[in-house]
Image 1: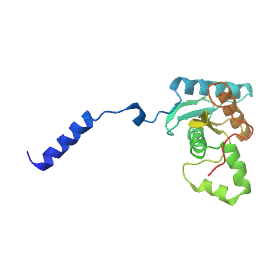
Image 2: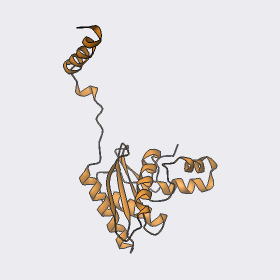
Image 3: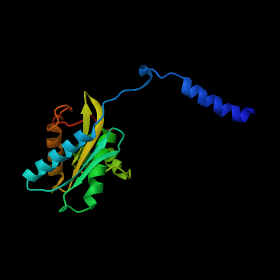
Image 4: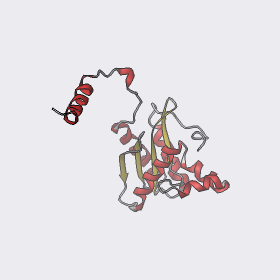
Length: 174
């Protein structure tokens, strides 16, 4: 056996034999699919009480889509809007309504609009558990930024295990 063939075999043997201890792994809370569905249902219900239909997207802590729910009466472009609102809220750890309002007053915040994945329209709210980000919810198509934001907040209120946003819904943006 030559060195080049022995090296991969040795690495595999080492990797298999190397013990993994629990303290070597980072353990983080996560939004489950069940919770994501509860959030989507609660957001849709809250908007329905306002006489509105919506699209809602729920992302996990890594920014991956867990659930998207679209009422057939809502335009399909709102699917991407809801996802991007959730992504923006997750990545900035700030409600998109707050970001949009800040961008109207501050050129530095306004520059966030130049990043292709961010969307500074109300309706995206980060999800946190004991202060740690675990995902985000995005609502679109509810008849305006205020409605979308209110329906996202109502969804979070329906899941008591999540931190409940305060009037200043999140930490400062970057």
